[in-house]
Length: 340
Ligand SMILES: [Zn+2]
Image 1: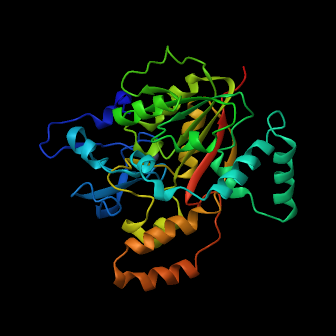
Image 2 (image 1 turned 45 degrees about the horizontal axis):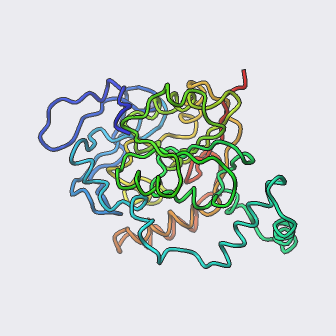
Image 3 (image 1 turned 30 degrees about the vertical axis):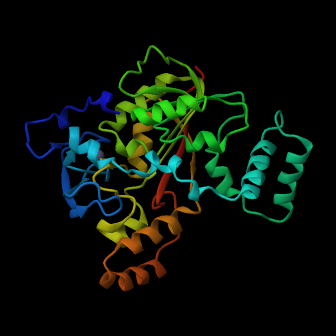
């Protein structure tokens, strides 16, 4: 991720605290900002001891850190980070029967791959009225195999394991050397963010997934442009990240799970993300609302909040508006590179 710093507004004047200044909105480039939150700490991983301010862009509403970690301090902020340790924890594995049903359901979505038994499982889930929205979202709406799929920022390879058994061609990008070798051992074609070049993957992929990555990179707009070039004409990008316009932020403020200071450098609003995708050349096809996001993010946010604030937060939860495209906890979009 460190190889795409092109946002000149975040050039690095010398500081001795491991932070770099960032004067402009990472989504639209505006320098007109107001202080949204201050004194926000690393509540969820406790890897950075600092206390951070978060600015809101007056032009597009997106959030960003005006001071963010760099160099060794950034490396420390990722020590023990969940996507980098998940593969080592066998206790988080779901039960085998659920895995079997999930794999059969996934195969049932692709007629060229599904066995009669898989189709029966798909029909059975529909017949009992099982809500498959969560399963569909985990599959990230991939096109049918044998598509060439890149998971940019693939972490420990969780997405690849979910698709295991389906004849996709899997590619990954990561920066952590331990993960790179572990993924290569699993048969994933994996490249290092520090050395991958645009020539290597020009117009290469049918589908690229970018799940909880864009908020971590120093220049999200540059990354969207780069991935546009890595897609085949007609290919599509799946992008997922917390929403700067989320109801959860209004309820929980600095303890909202989506902030994850200081690893999240910027969060866009819905209009800002759509604009950035369109500016990169994409046609935005679809927005998905994750039905599980509120319970997950709000549960963790409430648990992290000071005890004295929880009653007011619970009252705010009870009176919260329904989830919409603008106030969803997560922005999830599928955007296509036009075929011509
Ligand atoms: Zn902006």
